[in-house]
Length: 444
Image (cartoon, rainbow, N blue to C red; front, top):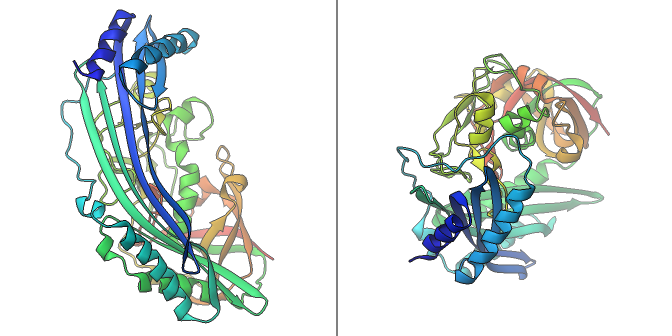
C-alpha cells in the first residue's frame, strides 16, 4: 500500500468523508555576479505536501515538508483540529475530477541538460559585454541567472490523480551608467526554455541603450498629458489590479467589479484573457488547485466584462460554475482564487505606430512604488515613473523623475490604442504597450 493510500485510509478511520493531497516540489539554481566574481549562489530543493479533508461538514487543512508513514498521524491530527475551529458559512468541496484534461507541454528537458558552469559563464559574459559597450558602465546593481523546475500533483480519494511539470530560466541585468553627477539605471531580462536562444551581447546592449537614453533628462510642464505606457510598465500596473477580477474579492466587497458582468468597464480596444496554455507563460497549468481542468477564459471582451475568476466556493456563492481558477500560493496555503497567464490581448499595431499618433505626450518606460501608491479598492494611483517627452510623434528627450496619477478603471476606459508588443515582466501578468488619452503628470 502506498503512502497516499495509507493516508486516505487513516483519514477515513478518523471520520473524513472526502480527502485530498496536494504536493509540490521545486528545484532552484540561482547565481548573481558582481565585477566578474560570483556574489550570490543558490542551489535548493524545496517542497512538501498539504492534506485537505471534510469531517463533520467542515474542511480541515494540514501540511508537512515530507510525507512518510510517521507524518500521517500528524497530518490527520492537525487537519481535525483545524476543521473544528473553522467557522465558514460556505462549505468547501473536494472535486471528483473533470471529464477531460487538455495536454500541456510546459517542460523543457533540454533546459535541464544545461550545466551549472555554462549558466555561470553566461551571466559573467553578460556583465563583461555591458562593460565593453561604454566606459561609463563600471558596475551593475543586478546581474543574475535563475533556473526553476516545479512539479505539482493533486490526488484525492475520489479517484482524481493529476500532475503538472513546468520549468524556465531567466537572466536579468541592471545597467548602471554614470556621467558626471548623473546616474541612470535600466533593467533588461530574458525568460526562456531554450538556453541556446540567449545572447549575452544582445541582452547587455538593450540594457545599455535603455540606460544611456535616460541621460541629460529635463523637466517639462506638469499637467495632464496623453500617456504611452510601455508594455513592461503596463503589465506591472495591470498586475496590481488583477486581483479585482477575482470573485473572491467582489464577494468580499473589495473590488468595484461586483455586479458589473455584461457591462462596459473599459475601452473597446481592451480585451483581457487568462490563458493557462500560453506558450512560455509562467502560470501554465492543465488543472487548478482544486483539480478542475483549465481552459482559456475571456475576462473582458472589447471593453465588456464577460467573467470573473472563480473557484468552486466562489462559483457556488454566485450561482455559477467554476472557471478553473482555484489557486494555492504554495502547498502550505489555503485554496484561494488566482489567474494563470492573465494579459491584455495585443493588436497588430506596432509600437512606432502608437508613438507616431501622439501629438504631445509622455512615454512611460518604468514605474516604481506601485504597491504603496496604488489603492486597489478605489483604483486611484500615484506612482513614480521614468520616461520621455513626446512631440509630433517622436521621442524628444528623457524627462526628470515624474509622478503619474489617475484611476485604473478610468484609465481602462481612456485607452485609445493597444500595441502588438505583448510582454510579461517575469510575471504571469502581461500587457502590450497602451496609449491612454490623459493622465496627470507631475515632474520634479
